Image 1 (cartoon, rainbow, N blue to C red):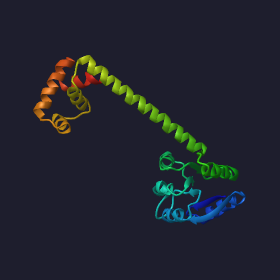
Image 2: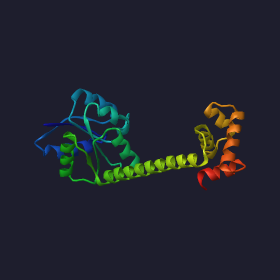
Image 3: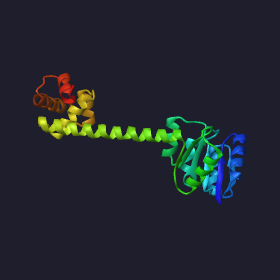
Image 4: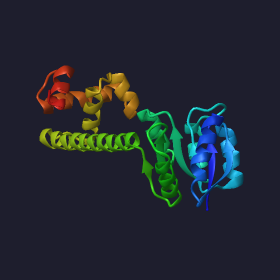
Length: 218
């Protein structure tokens, strides 16, 4: 049997979920909770195989307790909220699945519970779209970071900057003053000025604006 804890502050929703789950002969509802704090104590005591977790609840919402819950049970987020930040937060917190009320049939709920109980993932179309988008964005950020690092290496080699001079010009390009650069690198302002004078000479420029434009390729 798959023991299930239902967590939702709406008793009507809890009753409806109980009705859906009652049609499956391999599932049993072993407890209910109407807020996140009670959900934690119930999960700790009952150790259900799966917890159906709502988000908007009094005392403690779903997002604030999901990470702790996953230490006691597999979590299937089941809520009316479909915002990207919430979905990402639930999944990062350890939820194995995400379903949105109104976007699934009872039979899909049963399949999702079985999948999550077996250690698999189950996402609603919205959840899948958010996950794919997050992965795509991360891949883009990784490429941009790698490209920036590669450009910095090429620029450093091209102009013959020392590692310290590269640090100084990078901070200059980020808009920091000589005093701020000195604080960041634990140097005196005079030392920073000396580094910048050498950077200007190697870049073939005469002032800060030209240096940042040359360094950033603008």
